[in-house]
Length: 455
Image 1 (cartoon, rainbow, N blue to C red):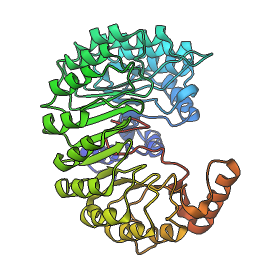
Image 2: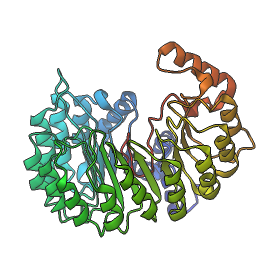
Image 3: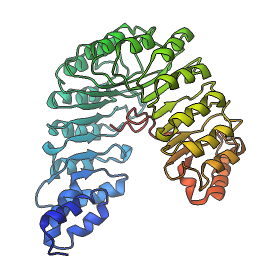
Image 4: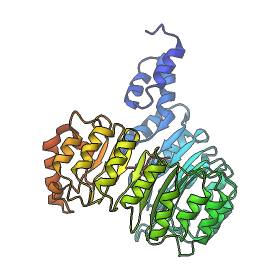
């Protein structure tokens, strides 16, 4: 096999990018494999715990030259990202080659200072995730370090995908100055740690970038008139919109979206109360959606779901949490779009029963994520059993099920009840119990991320 051309070996080694242990073994096999295997090993660095990062840093210290890295994802490290690890990364990695950089939340000033230095070195980064930095004692925003971190964007003018957690009261003027220079910006996500004010929204409205995706909120203050200007100014490029502020709903937002954003394919709203008349008109007119999530009061009703299905047959992700829908409207939808439905959120849809789960087991052959969390008095363990039966078309594809609201679980929040529920599920489903978890905390809605904010 050693006689194979080097090009073939390079292809084999490149296919092992997601298997670092195998690559590490290949680096120690012979000189022929050492170079390609090391290049693939350090191409994408994404440690999942402190021990794997510690091992990585030990290997870096033994290297004779700086390692080239394309993707550096430290977002899973959190408080385990010690200053010495960041110092090793700064010293032994070739940072100008980094195209994707994701950093974790911290309340420690020393890592925060090193993060600023790290971002400043990644001159050619295209995907950048800047965390919220809090004060060690009261976990309030650390204005000094958040300001320093967001100022690093002056050195990264080629950013295309940007996730920000460091925009808080006191850094808005700097943000407004910087965003005008990000001419390639296509995707912007401002997390729940942000406090988006009128000044920041106005800056985004005037930004030269061709925004295709925006996730924004919560807002600072209740004057949201500039949000309409933001959406209108980027109406020819926006395809994904997520607005998160459960305390307020910008009046006329749904009307603006359906009338002025012709290329909108993904919509997620987590807002205050939406006027019923506006909700009715939106569902009667909207078309071309692949993802639709509206979590608000009074919520989606059966008539809305019927209208949505009639004009949006290409839906792959649907969020119906806390709505009043029943099996009457959900079953026809599952039968129509089931073969390509990937994500379905039914959290606290109290009128859904085992009948809908039975239809899922025969129609939803692509379903990967299903949320049955919250209150579900009409869904029982029998329904879940049918969904995971070996004859169910869902079983090969399902990866996650939020099932805390199933009646027989008796889980309503205490530790003892949760342990009882986990024990029952483990006994019932054996090896499949790892995909049934206590709440729907994983990423939802495809690219419109809520928790891990993956681009």
